Image 1: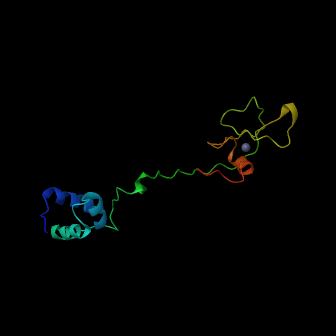
Image 2: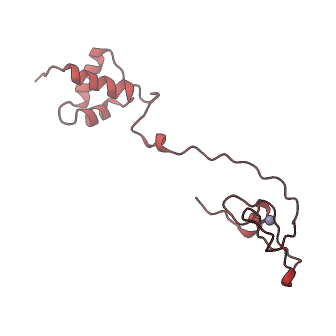
Image 3: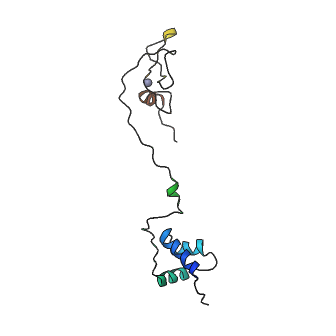
Length: 136
Ligand SMILES: [Zn+2]
């Protein structure tokens, strides 16, 4: 049985193939569920002069890749300049809290270099304190 395509259906077909870049099978599944099969979709596309752009289609709006976050920019840290030998009272929030190895007792001192944004230590001491970076 041959059922004529309506203008609305033609528009859906064009949308699925050209705009969304879906393959014929997915246009049939997603846009024409029970009304048109893959063969019918393909035949009608040919009549209209349309072509599925898969796999080189520029837009795949229904895939997950567009939801992926852009990668964070990596800014290399400045080279380690050595401990500033700050006391606990002098340390501020963004300064490295790694204790100096040769200090002890009430005059204990700390590195004090700018700390990694997500860590209590500077880049140099993170490498010492964390043998493996936690996965994010
Ligand atoms: Zn440090």
